[in-house]
Structures are given as C-alpha cells and as structure tokens.
Image 1: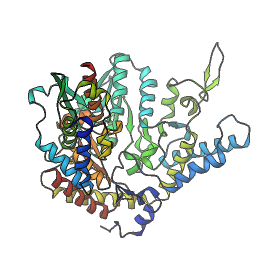
Image 2: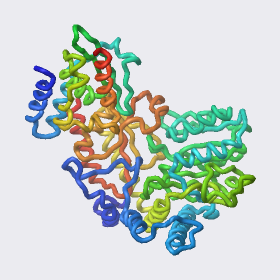
Image 3: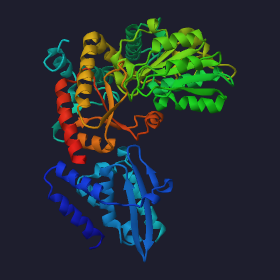
Length: 136
Length: 411
C-alpha cells in the first residue's frame, strides 16, 4: 500500500465504529499494546514536552525509507502515535515531506492535533516531517 | 444540613441565569466542573456587555459629550460598587487591571522597584506560576531574594517554617488565599498579622477566593489584594488590584500613557492621582462596567447559603470519590473550598480528561500552572473538578458514572 492507501485503510477501519467509545477503545488498545521506543532511547533529546502529555520521538533512515520510534506517557496520545507510525514507516522522505497527511481529520481526531490541545502531538507531526525533510 | 441540591428552587433559579449551562457538548448535556479556571457568566453580565456597545460606547474621562460622560459615570460607578462590596477604605484604592497576573506584575514592577539588594520576598510552594515568575524576574533584575515557604504533604502551609523565615529583610509576603490546584484555604489572617509584625507588606492572590469567600478588605488588612473578573462571573480581560492608598501613593507609576498623567511637558511630567496613576491608556471600559454587573449579581445572592451549598457539593463529591479504587486526592486539609484534585492509580490525567470530555464533562487536567507543586507530589498532573454555585449533586452523580466508565475503558 502506498501512503494514501494506508491512510484510506485506517479511515475504513474507523468507519466501522458506531460511537466515540468504540473509537477510543480501539485507540487505547493500540496505545496499550504497541511498544514503540526502547526505554534507553527515551531521553531528553527525544522528548517533546507538551503541556498535558509528553512524547518521545526518534527517527532513522534505512535504504531510503523513514522509520519512526515514538512513545507517550498518555495512552490515547500513544495510540494516535502508533497510527501515525503505521502510515509513515517505510515511506520515502519525499513522500512524508510532500504528501498530505489527511487521515487524522477524516477519523475525527483532529482535536488532538490542535495547538491548544498541548499534548505534544502537533509538535511531533511537525518534527516527523522535519526529520524527513532533512533526509531529502 | 439542609438539602441545597437540585431540589432547591434557588439553585434552579441561579442556573436559569446562566444560558451556557443548558447546552449539549458531544451530544451530552454539558456538566461544567472547571470553575476554578473560569466561571460562567449570568445574563446580567452578558446583557450589560451587549447594551454598552449598543447604546453607550464612547471613550471615558475628559470627554465633554453625552456618551463619554455616561460611559465615564458607569465605569466609575462599577469601581464604587466593587469597592463597597469588598469594603475598601475608598474606591480610589480599587485599580482596574487586566486580571490577577497583571495585578501581580504591576506590584512586582512598581513596588519591586523600591526594593534593594538583599531584601526578601516570601511566596508559598503552592503558588500559581503568575505568583512565582514576576518575583523571579525581579530577583534577577533587583538582586532581591525569593524564598519559598514549604508546605506539608496534606497541602497546608508549614506555618512553623514561615515563622522562622520572616525577618527584618522580609519586604513582602505574597501568597494565594486559596490554592487553585488543591482548593486549600490558607490561614491568611495569621499570615498577614505575622508578616506585619515583622514589618513586611502582604499581597493576597484572591483569584480563587473571590468567587467562594466574602472578602472584607478592611477586616483582612492586607496591603494588596488582586483578582480576575472572569473568576467571579465577570468578563475576561478585566481584574482588580486593591492596594492601601498610602502604599499606592508611595509607589512609582507602572506604565506611562494617557489617563495616568496630570500634566505632560518635555521638561517635566506630573502624574494623576489614584486610581488613575496606575491606569495608563484607554482601559477595558466594557469589562469594568460588566464586572460591576457581576458584583450586582453577587450582591443579589445569599452568600452564606451558597457557601453551604458549595461545601455540601465538596463533601459529597469527596465521599463518593473516596469509594473509587486506587483514587488519590491531593490536598486533604479540612479547610478547603469546592476544588478537588485527584489521580486514579497510574492512569494519565490527560487520558481520563479526554474520555470525560467525550461524555460532556468539562474538567481540567494537567499541572494547573503549578509545576513546582506537581514536582512536590512527583506527579505529571491531576484531574481537577471545581464546583460553583450553579452545580448540583445530580451532576456529581452523573460525573461519577462517567468517571467509572472512563476508568473501565482505560484499565
């Protein structure tokens, strides 16, 4: 699947949920299950300090593909991060820097990316894109 | 105790004056438990703002025309109402500011400029950032020493430590009347008396207390008292700094501009009298007038009855919350206002707050602008519910159901 197809697939998954609770239960399960970053990498250099929750982000390029490792101390934030990583991992820096990231809005989670939410996610997405740009 | 909850028509009558409370959020009836952050506005305040702009808008002071004189009269009348409600010596001691933060910065800048190297300012460990950072700025610009009065684990100020810290170098004690995070009411009468005995002035941050306590400035005898209008049913962007007139007269102006001058020439400018000396520029006229209406609203209430109602909500909510497994309430003093800060096990406050929001509950999560206090308890933040006069026991019951549901989802 390409970048757009991966996003559409998540949108399709979310369209099956009937209410906010099912949606959040799914995100929370993602947040609980996935180990996203090795503990030793959760240092201050990787830390994005949000007002409400904290986020750690590390990125690598391998063979022209971007790979991200991230975590958060809040489960909902972590669940959304794992969706972002699912979409972005393995993509070229060019794709991540230039193509549109639209699924968050489509699945109704845009409030988590608003500057006032202060959960570190908006800054994280910016940094994910900046890391990609550095590798173009 | 008399039941003052939802069965009481007076609470229903009060609720009916707050139009925002009857709306839905995320498809659920809104329950507003974020009153420590800001209070909702009654119709009397909302309508006053609208009618001012519809019928009275003009710049105040020095205008000869009808509208300007009317606006000036109303603005000054608001000052008098607030002065009389708070029992100040004179309305010239009531200075309009942008809010609590602005008031503290005014004092830090003006009173602070009269301090010398080695002078000491005492604040407590539970202060809001706005009663920390202005003094830190002063510490670096004037070489004064900022000292922190410690608190006990239950959130109360360590008064023995305070006694020991007071000395002849103490020039100001600046403490909050009520902790915005813990809801604890500080023993400010004792603090003021002791500070005065040591020759220090006292600034009381009344941001939280103005809504919950009846303030009598003469009786309190503090030197400065600051609060924000929006915490007491008034608009944002307006607040009050009270200062004793002798003290305010001895202090240099804060900002220069219009209104604060008596006469300007390039050789020498002289300043206006109180309160105008500290009110440079066109003020928040409508804010001041509407804050006056908020005090009319306060005047119309039975303060003691509503205080009992808030205490009943506090006790009921604490009792019910304590039944929840792994709950930890921060600030366990008996002397509290209707604010409860808590965490549940190792659940992140942000996660709990997000799920509560989805169910229509407005609560605050995070560090509540008191990061040093969070460091003291070694936590990233708390979930804070804060009740006002229009909240009911029924809302607390609904909240507990929503909270338990959130815990189930997250566990």
